[in-house]
Image (cartoon, rainbow, N blue to C red; front, side, top):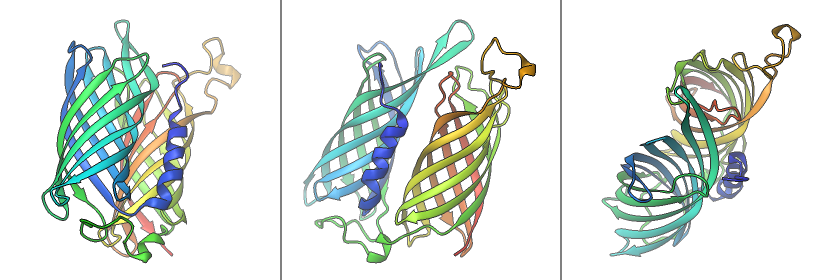
Length: 338
């Protein structure tokens, strides 16, 4: 798509809109199928969806959608949507219509062994039907229509289960925002975490390597963290990246503040020892591996193990401009203090 909206701009919009409105939340995991327009190709699909109630009949969501491996395309991305909800049967069932922006990453083959990473923005339109099984658990059926200008148009159909993570039971018949005042003042304590995991380069061969990271996290205002990190992506042969990242994170907590989730975005300043600045430069010039900057988009979930120890999982997506996007999956143990 020409002139796509960069992922970091969409994330900044999500940061601005979500931080002051974190009242009630639903997390849903769905699985199903992807069908290319015209029923030419199909594949699996899965989606992780986080939804926030804003007003009684309106909500917003951020979702990761993996469209599977349609022939010639390995596409996934992040969707930001606004939703209108229609409750039925004493609010035990809800029908929802959503619309928004979908920033995608599409790995496509080039020649016998090469690949390219196409980035773009598309409109996404969604329908969801939700049935609430209890005050916490629910099931959801969802259909997404993804319409990029210069890439394949697809429809995903998925079914899954979700959990209400509000501080109290799901407020049937009540407006959102009636949670405890203490939750509205949540500020993350200073935290240092060491991570280990795996990096996966988004090529048709999905080369992998051991990875590691170290992160300092600090709450800035209620429900907004800042982090400074060192990231080592290992050596998956096609890249050898490492560098520092600075991110902002809207975060929310649940289950008596013992568990938190967050979405991060910011610059990743890296050196890639397998990617020269220019094919015409000499190795001896000293400019073969200059520092470069890429957007870094992340998801995290953390669980407090004790007063000072925290277990944290992070999923980073590096958005490169030279067909070397990567996913970094990290698990770490952190120490926090006041």
